[in-house]
Amino acid sequence: KALGGSCRTSVVVTLRSEREHALQSIDALRFAASLSQVQSLPDSDSMGAAVGALRELEERIRTVEEAIREKERWETSTTTRRDPRYQAGEATVEEEKVTKTELVGAE
Image (cartoon, rainbow, N blue to C red):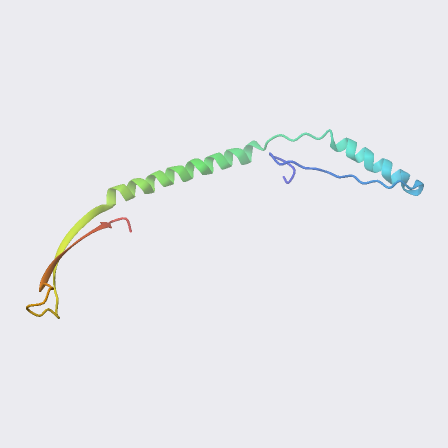
């Protein structure tokens, strides 16, 4: 599995030039030559599973987005506030209307 699919693998073969290591060096070169013949094909099972998982996630996202669009709305409310510190003759007002708009339903 680790070498399958769409991965790329590199193998580095090192050799020693001393006469006493000649047989090991030849074996290493033969091993490297045999590796160059290895071909891997994409693992269609894992690709299919990934594609299926992505489709499932996309469908879940569409469902959630649709539910949000159905539930969320803008609500506007107006309230009257009294200033408890209001004193006649000042530049302030005794009551003021406050309009507030907020998005609701998307919690």
